[in-house]
Image (cartoon, rainbow, N blue to C red; front, side):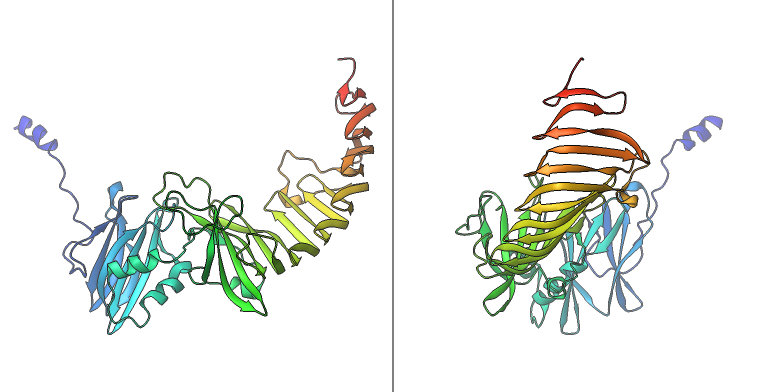
Length: 391
């Protein structure tokens, strides 16, 4: 008897029922995504259709809400690679005589499915007024669009016309290679370096967006493009040099698009006050004249802020050093005060750095090289052409 009990304890446990077991389904079967082991099911509950999913590969049958479709039928559910960030689940539904089309993605870090809201305007346009719609038609419509990496969340530019752009729409200008040359068409062998689209026209000026190919697309099922520049151009078929009006440049890091530069162009040249910022790293601001930095400029980082004069794009004269940006400063970083001198953008003259009023570095530069006696942490010494003597 004891032996039988022991053998019985080794019998495999009965598998838990699937989270959709016993509930009428709106599709022929559940759908499993190829990434993450996520299983989706569209269930009929109280006369309406609700979508659910679970991370069933982790041994859990806990269902989570995907979306609600109301009194609708599910016409198609399929996966599509819109970019290099993994597959997108498309759900085509029909309620009365109107179609609905929605896109969802799986976020590995958070372990959840989410609706791709930024793609929704393009999806709405595909099904709007359609009498007949199916998976093949949706795939063909999406293939005709120039899509971007929709996993990136872009910070508002602060320019209403720019922030209102629906990137799935617009008119394609063309594709460009890395040398900025307009290509005869979409390359078949490898993704283009960039492409451009226009979204409106005013008095010969076109609201233009330039999209750059993201890094690391090799090996992906589809290339990823991201927003790089938004501006007004007079000749958008040129890669650059026809900007004329407000300009925004984005810098993309992982899943965030931050405004890196904002300013004004006049006939392809920067003019007026510009602002630049690399998040949590450095920011700068000052004016351009004829595409070259001119007049007072300020550069701020975590450890110091430098302020001085620019002349034809080069630092000149005495630059003052004051404390940096507090929130950017790591616990082991210091904040400096002091000064530098420049001639044609090269250090030339007295230079000093202090921490809490105490001199840390002090000496003289000649043509960008340390010369003469220097005070430094640990003792300092004599320099000749940037080489410390007596070592």
